[in-house]
Image (tube, rainbow over all chains, first blue to last red; front, side, top):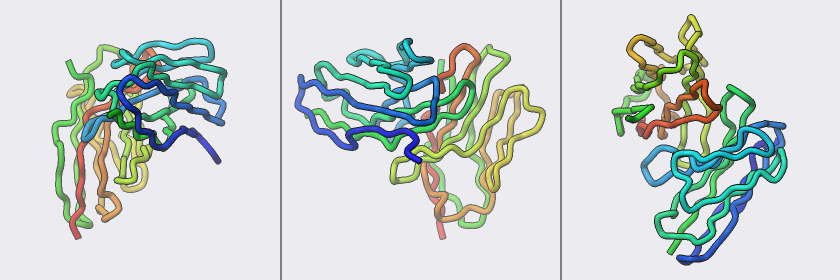
Length: 111
Length: 114
């Protein structure tokens, strides 16, 4: 059972570089999410997609863009990475009103 | 204002004892859900327990129980008979009716001592 799959698991970027974090789920979930977790802190919502074709800003959307490519895939793009975006990124998905299933996370360092 | 507050940044518990992790929340929605997740040092997020705002009874899942006090807006997690493997970060989260997204608290780190 794959569940929620994120790639890559680790990434180091230089300031100003761009990259896309990929996320796919095979549970036929309608909703998908991107969270970031800074050291010793809780998860903060960056963007989410309640259903295919829709995306909405979360708590900390600045510096990020997302694409809900289809029902399975939800990508997060950093157009011009900044050191403040050094964090662990989690993708998650769920059906309406149910628990979130999380990916294993992407550890991103921006130098 | 914080929607989810976990006031205990860290705590120690003796193996085999019970521990209570505090969580208070703030919402004006009558319909909401409360979740607890565990994050071990390996980093994955593990779902533990769920309580709906209209649930009449406190949720239980094995050694985990949720002490839900609606009037106080608190949803404390109780772990009974602590094990060394319970050492982890624990996060409380809330889903409000307006939207399907979860808002997380800052977490509590639990260290179980042998």
